[in-house]
Structure formats: C-alpha cells, structure tokens
Length: 431
Ligand code: AMX
Image (cartoon, rainbow, N blue to C red):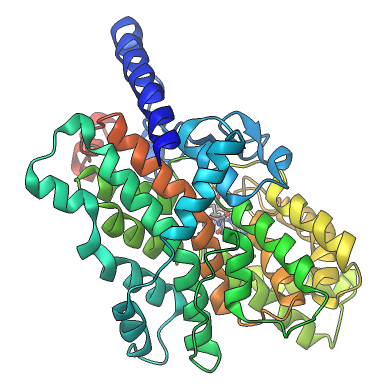
C-alpha cells in the first residue's frame, strides 16, 4: 500500500496546513443562518459540515472531487475509490496497487457466514449486511491501535486499514447475503484474480456458464457501484456514519450504523419501494400502462397519503444525473423491457403531476426511480435486496470520508439543540 500511503501522507499534510490557514484568515465568517423553520425541518440547507470527497450542487448533481459523475462512468470502483480518498485519479501503478489491495483483503471470516446463516429467515437483507459488518468489529485495526495509545495525527492510518478491509470484503458479504436469503445458501467464494465489480457480479451467481448477457451485467455493476458511491456529507447514511465515527468508534461501527440509515424508505430503501410500486402498477393494468392510467395511479398513491418513491430530493432540484445514466444504459441495451418502459413513461408523467403540489420542492426523479428496473431486467428480481447493492457502492464514499475525517483530526460532532420553549421565547411567541 506504499503508493497510496505516500500520496495520502503528502496530501494530508498540505490539507492540514491549508485548513489551519483558512480558519486563521476567515474562521469568523458565517456560512449560513438558521431560521426557526429550518430547525423544525430536518436542518435542510443549514451549511455546517465539511465534506471534500464530493459535492451535490442542486442544479448539477453529484460531483466527485471536482469531476461530474457522468464523466466518470466507465471508470472502475477501484479508480473511484482512489479518487475519493486522495482527490486524484490513480496512475497505472497506483491503480494496480489499489486493485491488488482490494483483492488480497477479500477473504471473509467463517464466523460471518455462520452468523448470517443463523439469522431469522425473515431478516431484511440490510439487517443482515449491517450485522455482518458490525460482527467484524473485533478485527478493527483502529480499535486495537487506539487501545495501544496511537497518536491522534496517525489515527487515519489504521482507519485506512479498516476502510480497505471493509471495502474489500463487502462485495462477497453482500453477494453471500443474496445466496443465503434468496438462493440455495451456498455462497460463492471471492476470486482474487478478478476485479471488484466483476467479482461481485460473479458471486451473485445469476448467470449460467456461457450466458452472453454476463458482460452487459458486469458493465452495469461497474456503473452501479460508482453511481451510488458518495453524495456529500449530509445525507442520512454518510452523516450517521460520520457522527458515529467522530466519537472514535471505528469504521465497522460507523458503516454498520450508516447502513441502518440507508435502510430507510426515504433514503436507500426507496429503490426497493419504487420497484415494488411500479410492479404493482403494472399488475393493476396488466402490462405497460397508458399515460392516463399512470396519472390516475399517481394520484391514487398521493391521495392515500403516500409518497411517489424515487421522486423528489432533499438537495437536488433537477433530474438526478444518476437517473439519466441508468436511463441511457437501459435505452441502449433493453429499450423494450416492460418494467423499464414503464419507468421511462413515468418520467414523462410524474413530474408534471408533482409540480401541481406546491409543497414539493423537487418533482424530478432521483436515482431510485430507475436503478431497480435495470437490475430486474437481468433477473435480479428480489427487490428487497436492492438497497444492499446501494450499500456496497456507498461503502466507498463513507469509508473515504471516515479516513479523511480522521486525517483532518476532526472533533466530536455535537450540534446544539434547542427546546420549543426556548424558541417560543426567542420569537416572542404568544398563542
Ligand atoms: N411524493 C409525495 N410527496 C412528496 C414527494 C414525493 N415523491 N417528495 C416530497 N414530498 C412531500 C414531502 O413528503 C413533504 O411533505 P410534508 O411537508 O407533508 O412532510 C413535502 O413534499 C416537502 O418535501 P420536500 O421539501 O420537497 O422534500 P424533503 O427534503 O422533505 O424530502 C425526500 C426529500 C427524498 C425524503 C422526499 O422527496 C421523498 O420522500 N421522496 C420519495 C422517497 C425517495 O425517493 N427517497 C430517495 C431519496 C434519494 C436517496 O436518498 N436515495
């Protein structure tokens, strides 16, 4: 790992120096004001967190270390991980090293399989993933180095070890969960000779030998694992993980906690909810529905007090570029797939309907409106599994953020809360 460590060492000392100077020269300048209404609405738009791995301008979507996601499609998860960690795409040698690191750490401890196989049969795949990760906590290098008294400046080094171990193992664990939960329970062992995305696709065991769609599916996995890798620092999974990690709980605790947040229907579970919703819709109308039928169904959902899954976003105010990426993929490889076609038709109908509801700030689709349909096409039909795929990808961003937070020696996260009684006094509230 010498090239990565060397690069990070020089970057980290420059980053530390720069932040010190930033605080000295402009530390008093306010970043945002907080209105009472924002305190009551999930701190939306309150700027008070630093995240350097990626940013999400509301009119552009995900930008990873300065490069828009769309320009990064075609890169491998290994390249993106190096980019997230260091700010630079790797050169040939650096990439080779990253690929090897993630290959050699791929072995899954046997106790993980025992735990997963003994969990209740109705455990959600995300519960299984979160459990598997936290079960490995005893292997944390950060935890053991901290016990030995490692210096604060060096916290990032064992955190990087943990990050690489977690990222290397998650594909095999995730694929194993699929085999245990939905197939015959025989897990397919990792192959240290092939790359991250392809090995994950192989371990799912969806295709028999000689099936020609394997290559397409591998391509999709490569894209999928990049598309969900990071989305700045304030989203539920990243923020949860960061909060846990700020208490110097190691990355096993943090990632597991972040995944628990990802498992919520307003966050990462929306891909499962969206696919379920579209399939129910197709069942109701016996195939690909007409535009009028779509419109009726949308209002039926809204009038029942439910959200349209996959639409809206806490930050974005445009169609999510990740949605567009998957749409381009589907249009290229399976434009006539009925589920995909329905998703594309919904894209033409839903925003116009959501625009009629004033309180909805963003009527446009997010990634979860489409990401399930592309998996479904290749036979990955168990949609309660979809958030696990999201998590495999998101582990790249969350662990990279964790390494950087420790490198920057960031303190405990502890925003201040306020009571309703105090707010009443501040605004001179009278009934
Ligand atoms: N359908 C129906 N109502 C919606 C809606 C949708 N798709 N999106 C927003 N609204 C509603 C909200 O529920 C809220 O209603 P309330 O005031 O009665 O509670 C109101 O519109 C205002 O919401 P907002 O400011 O536009 O969005 P937000 O920041 O509060 O929430 C999000 C963002 C994503 C939770 C919301 O758009 C939503 O629930 N979407 C559907 C679920 C989804 O797709 N989640 C995935 C997001 C991406 C991800 O994290 N993977």
